[in-house]
Length: 91
Image (cartoon, rainbow, N blue to C red; front, side, top):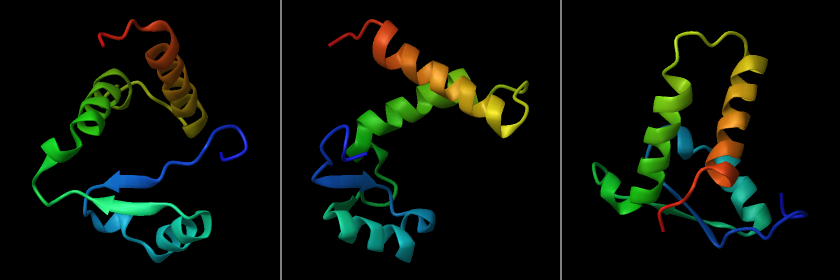
């Protein structure tokens, strides 16, 4: 990733155990990216991500017709391109 764009200074995440693995911490240390955790039960501290997750879930992940992993990756990639390139942004 760092070859095509710069790395962020920090990653914001909730305090879920799946985001607290030793592998993630080692990787972040290796690339010199800090972790910032939002307080439990305070999703408004990370409103941008909460909004993005809601839109992604509604348009892609809640679909009952998804098949194998390759199809899921295609659906998500097409949604990502549409969201970032084609969709008009309000701001």
